[in-house]
Image (cartoon, rainbow, N blue to C red):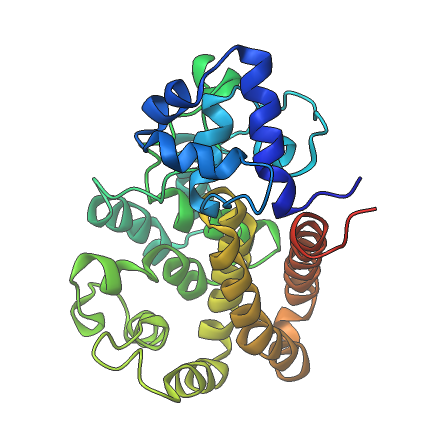
Length: 304
């Protein structure tokens, strides 16, 4: 049987029975009313829990979100919050910067780490259980610096050795998140220009037509364009851990509307990044198509 939102209530009821759990027990654990739980598990026209609440419901019932949809058990996978350790990435990139004489990049690593100190990524919606108990990750405290470090590691692994590009990977969020103006950055005019193009105008970013204007400006600068592509790739690669299904749909649409045209523009106009953008686009498209198929399998396809 293919999963459906309509299966959630009956599967909650099945799992409560297996655990010997009463409606009030589940309500107390989730800090909701017994009437709310009763509405979820009733036979006729059951209420459907909010998608953002499903991870907590699954954890309380000692199962998975997938099982709530399908009733089919999956392996007890450990979800790793960190693919790589930030200190290892930092040391690795510092070594590259020194041996390859990338002076600005060397300084940008420490500058970004200092500016993003105390900032954390969004909590992983699916942490807990075996992985957290084993100390493999802490869903509440994932340093934000992991994001630019991953971008810089990705860029370097793709063969990009440009000092300004690697520096901009580390600095691209400093202005938006840390209250620094692009022109105040203690780096070259080229790096300031790249970061300035990547920084959204807080006062106007929600205006109609702003995204088109923002991406058009980035496309005109090859180094800003490749950094933005790397940024989108990293965000897409990690969004499944912290985005609700509705947010995933929104981000997929935004990527298809603006990310794909950016990738194609880079491929057609900036030959120096032709190989890099092939790998980036392959990763992004593969992930988005996988997520779309999973969304359909749990929400849209009919039972049978």
